[in-house]
Amino acid sequence: MTALGFLYPGHSGEDDYPRIEQLLGSDIRVDLVHTDIGEDAHRVDALREMGSPRRLAAGIEELRLAGADAVVWACTSGSFVHGWEGAQEQVRALARAAGLPASSTSFAFVRAAKELGARRVAIGATYPDDVARLFADFLAAAGLGAAGVVSSGIVTAAEVGTWTASQVLALARAADRPDAEAVLLPDTALHTAAHIPALEKELGKPVLTANQVTVWEGLRLADRRVNAPELGALFTREPVVQA
Image 1 (spheres, one colour):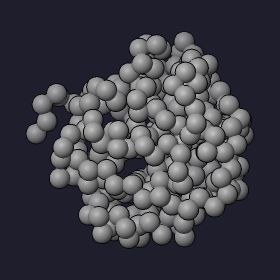
Image 2: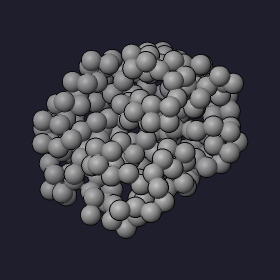
Image 3: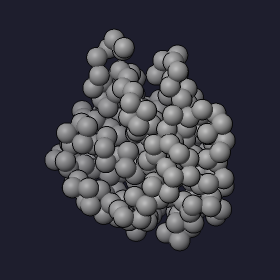
């Protein structure tokens, strides 16, 4: 059994995780611990506080007791707002506190894009423009170019969590650019796990979404690779038959 541990901020799009677990196979367990987000606001100061060490530390022991093999901070904005170096220190502190391999959704996007060979990406963000631009800056620090950045100006994760499939598709369409090799939807509050194949079919290219890449990153940390086409091109890099 491979046990993946995730620290998820508040309650918005977390039901993506049991859905993804069902698609991965019976020997992979997804454990989710909700962290206290403080103020629900896509504002830089609030997001930095959301990902502060004291807020993340509160959930670590529960994941350790659950037998997690790795832990991922399942929040994009609560990691990239610290900048490249700050996000790295956030992950290092998480790894030290948990005694486990650790990462965050922001780094998951970087590694997932590179896994697909994408160097130029389009960003469809639910965040206000200033926060969306910080994500583009984070990707640039990793050598990934932004073909375009579309922001929806949504202030709270709670509102993002109410978005329908048609709204997610509209965001992805608006974000896509002809020269983008992949489209990124960077918000773990957004429900996307059920829509990835439809998004990729519509756009004709890989689509990376926050909860999808977060689980993929957990698997990578645990040294597991899984073929699960229902989760998009990212999950078709491995043979169908798993060891």
